[in-house]
Image (cartoon, rainbow, N blue to C red; front, side, top):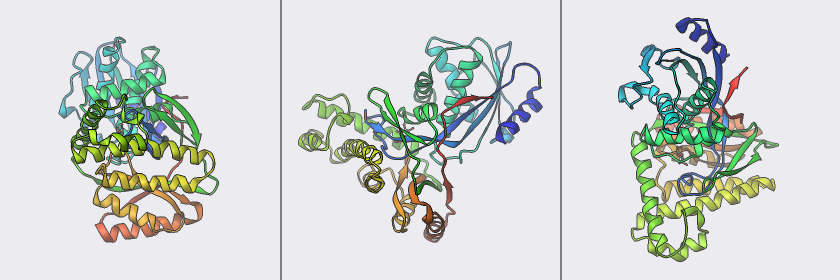
Amino acid sequence: MMKNETLSKFKELFGEDGDIRCYFSPGRVNLIGEHTDYNGGHVFPCALTLGTYGVARKRQDRTIRFFSQNFPKAGVIETSLDDLAYNKEAGWTNYPKGVAWAFSEKGQPIDSGFDLVINGNIPNGSGLSSSASLEVLMGIILNDLFEKDFSMIDLACIGQFSENNFNGMNCGIMDQFAVAMGKKDCAIFLDTSDLSYEYASVKLPDAKIVITNSKVKHSLVDSAYNQRRSECETALKELQSVVSIQGLGDLTEEEFEAHKDAIKDPIRQLRAKHAVYENQRTIKAVAALKSNDIETFGQLMNASHVSLRDDYEVSCEEIDVLVDLAWNVPGVIGSRITGGGFGGCTVSIVKNDSIDSFIETVGEGYKQQTGHEAEFYVVEIGDGASKLA
Ligand code: GLA
């Protein structure tokens, strides 16, 4: 049990006394609605049962001590509440530090230090949101230890705020929201323009969600992400000169086609097209799922991949190999890249009796074509972050 391992490590490093508390925060996978969350569109992610465990205890002084079982060689990293500045050398601790900083930016500073041990099983660099998992974990820990009354949605927003303003990654709200608000066997249909949401069951009678990890992550991920985001912002401004909208998510496909010439650069037009069409695909996909039309859901996932590959250009060779292989396996309902892009994972919906052949065929083909060993996770959908008993 990872919780017990984490607790024992905490006691070994920091002693057994006082009020020691345990928490868990999941990773996430997005089923459809990619790069729509910073365009006022819809997303459809769910929380995984993979995630990050945290064991914490409040201190009386202003010292903060961190230890990660995933990076044991780094040892105990010590800092102070009076020194919450981003520091490249501080590695993973920049995420929890950013959240502590964000609590005070939001008017609720914490008044003493703490000891924290974390232990996660989200594969590194897989695009399954280990950073959002850690941010929301820190949020629920500080909220609980220091008796703040932020809601789970507040904590999701605080996680995003700290990632944007402390860690310099201009992400949308999807990951932190999914991690904070996840619900067993459900995906969250979230409208990022106003944070209204509803849960939809993704417990399928004869199919499962399978994540395939390409094990590659191309380093341009953060810079290209921020660049796509600013391309969309410019396209929005150009469109706003001809049509009254708040975000690209306000447009239907027809409205986009009628006004797209306002976007002067052809590449930028393709980026905006993706944001508009992907949002509409997400709305259609959730409607299809609700009426048990899983085939249509799968086709929309495939179309999402094509658009991310060709118009938004956030896929890469290795991921395209995985998706092409998946599309050719009988019993695969849909398959696409998931998350920010440039490597990471694909998400597929696969009929129960095809899962073994899926893993075999895609695994072997991928090895042959790229030399890499893919990893497969037949996923369980879990609850959002919480304190553990
Ligand atoms: C990353 C970001 C999210 C979202 C996705 C793409 O995971 O953190 O906010 O933009 O990429 O859909």
